[in-house]
Image (cartoon, rainbow, N blue to C red):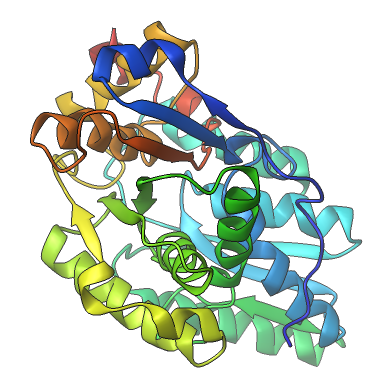
Length: 329
């Protein structure tokens, strides 16, 4: 049994979107995981419950984690660490070629300063193993100073503890409404997507779960979710119910690449804001929500279907992209 540090103490809202339901000809609901956890929240709060649980079990006093410059994950980790009396060391890796002042100083970067995190930098955004090694070197220094560090790994090959948070979330959603035909969620590291899919299948739900790519193309992401699911099955029985044909991936909003805003994502941001008054971020949720109208249009989501869109948060990044969001207006 894996220890859980309670960060998301109450179910997040599950709300029908009336305007978009009418526009798209489906029954569309939104799971408000943008309200999960501290410091503007987000889906990573659920993932961190199991990492901080493991850290607490190990007696750790310091958390080390890697993410992109505007990472919601590292921002939430810093916030949670502070609330638990722990030190946070965050490593920001270069995934996006953007030297604009808002990207470098605002959004999650500003929040990290406010949260008191120690910030490291790593130059290569696609070298996950190298980024982990840099944290291991820093952790070794901490141990020599008498600290007890815990690393939240970036690279594959580790038990996907974070995915357990979305196994829990799947059960939470089904307790709120068990009648969905389709779930749509952002698909990046794979923990949220794989955990949600595993939790639904383990509970007997046959709803399709469609992951919208935020970093890799459909072929690469399909393979990644398969690998994450197999590792998850080693620590969670629910994941053993997932079959290869359960892994559904859409990459129609991926261009022009991670952390950069394209026209499909910009249109999705505008649609959600003007129709329902809800905000999406340009890195994750603009891309994931863009899948909903596209999949309705191509028939993957049938007319009249009951659809649950998972809002994974990331709203701090809106301010970091202020120089680029003009295309969403």
